[in-house]
Structure formats: C-alpha cells, structure tokens
Image (cartoon, rainbow, N blue to C red):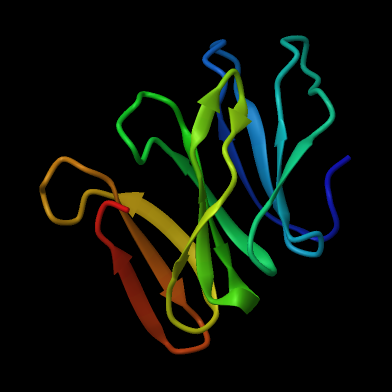
Length: 136
C-alpha cells in the first residue's frame, strides 16, 4: 500500500542492490513513499518522507554527484520543489525546499546549460511558466 492519492511514480534502484525500487508521490498525504524491492517480485512496505503540500510529480536522479539517486518532487499547493538527498541504503535526508512559480506540476532533471551538472526544470501550471533551477 502507498499513501493517499498517489499522483506520480518513478522506478529506480535507490539502494544500489541492482533491483528497481518504487518512489511514489502521495499527493493527499504530503509525502513521498519509497518501496524497496525484495527481489522476488514484491516490495517492502513504503518508508515515507514529508515534503511540501500536494506533491504531484516525482523524478529520481543523482543531483549532487555522489552516484546515489536523489528524489525531486513538485509540491503544487506550496509552490515549491522538495529535494531529498540519498543518504545511502535506500534512505533519504530531510527535504530541502526551493520556491518556484505558481502550481508546479511536472519536473524533469537534465543538464540544460552544459556544465555537466543536473538542472531542475519545472512546469508551473498555475502561472503558465517554466522554472529552471541551475544545479541546486
């Protein structure tokens, strides 16, 4: 089981065991859930991490160049993105929030300025804008 009103999911190995894990944005619970793969086609119960209000879209990418997948989630009602850095073994540090424009819905992470560092790009539904956060 996951939290209330799951809105987005990413499938990535977050604990370096070569098995795909599930990361889900639980919009109604204001958290993200991480379900680690048991290796037998099932997953452990989710571990939840508090994020901003109404998480909508999730991406899982190494944003701090430590070779561990981090969680980035848009938080629609708080007009922020939350970044949770991977602490190792499938656990994550507390969120760091970054303000964006109104109603962030979708997030993508890619190097947009050719500095070999990941940048965070957010589509803001409420303001009809796009925010670019250069290597947070």
